[in-house]
Amino acid sequence: EMQLVESGGKLVEPGGSLRLSCAASGFTVSSNYMSWVRQAPGRGLEWISLIYRGGGTYYADSVKARFTVSRDDSKNTLYLQMSRLRAEDTAVYFCARDNVVITTSGSLSHYYYHGMDVWGQGTTVTVSS
Amino acid sequence: SYELTQPPSLSVSPGQTVSIACSGDNLDNKFVCWYQQKPGQSPVMVIYQDTKRPSGIPERFSGSNSGNAATLTISGAQAMDEADYYCQAWDSSTAGVFGTGTKVTVL
Image 1: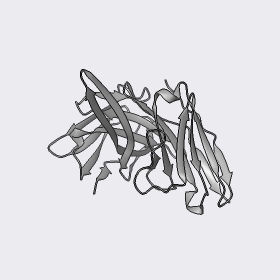
Image 2: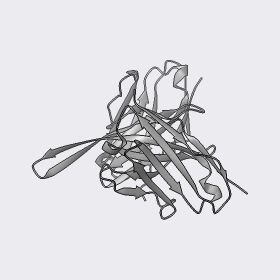
Image 3: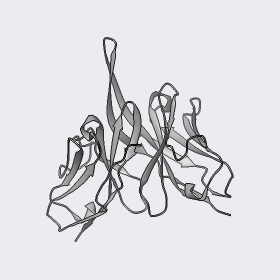
Image 4: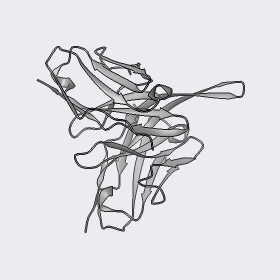
C-alpha cells in the first residue's frame, strides 16, 4: 500500500524556521514528482512546491525564496524547509505524489498527468507570537 | 499567475444531478483533475486527465473539459457526496494550481 506520513508541524514565532518531513512507503520518492500543498484554516487548497524526478524544483510565488523542497533518497523522505515564517503561513501542510507518466517518441517527450493520487494526513504549522 | 474559478457553493437534492464548473484561460490545454475533501480529511482525487475515474471512485462522478471551462458532474448525488470539491490544472511547464473550491451540500 502506498502511504505518505508528514511530521514536524508545530507552533513557531514569526520570522522563525521549521522543517517538515514526509516519509513515503510503498513507492519511491525519487522516481516521482512530489508536491507540497497547504490549507489555511477555513480556506482552500494552495499548491506551494514541486520537486521533479530529476531533482529540479518549482515554487508558488507566495513561498519562493523562503521555502526549499528537498528529498533524501536513502530515507525515501521528502522535506520542506521553511524560513522567515509569517502568520499567513499558518496552515495544514500536506505532501502528495504527482503521478506523471512520461512517454517518449523519438526526441519528443509527452507528459500525462494522472493527478495527486497519494496524500498524507497533513501536519499543522501555526505561526504566532 | 494562472487562476481557476469555481462557484463557492452548490446544493443538490439526493438522487439529483449537480455540476460544478471550473473556469480558466485555455483550460483545455491543460490536464484537469478534481478532488473531494471532507471535513478534517485529506483530499481524495475523483477525476484525472479531464474525464478519467481512479479505481474505487463511483461511476456517478464524471468530468469534461472544453475551451475555458471544466466540469465535474455528480449524477444521482448521495449524502456521502457532501464535501468540498477542488479542480486542479496541470501542464508540463508549470505545476498544479487549484481552483477556489466549491462546497456541495446534499439536502
